[in-house]
Length: 91
Image 1 (cartoon, rainbow, N blue to C red):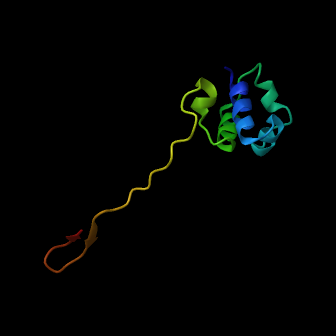
Image 2: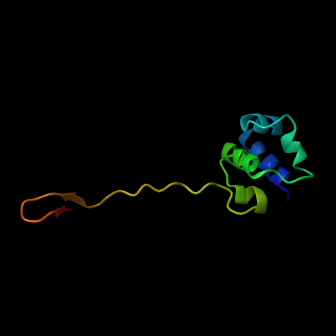
């Protein structure tokens, strides 16, 4: 499956037309349709991937359909200065 058809499939899942994806990504009028026959620039591909909440890898190769979720690491240990030592660990 080509880049264009992956974009078309993801747009359909969101209820959007190709023209709407094109507009949301800030691309020229027929840019996405041109991708049926030529390769997109990296910047344009990244813009479309961002709009469709996917990765450029998925658009190019069909791998990993969604962006990995950012994991927030929480500190489980709090360090506070003390008189006895430079830091005391509180858990």
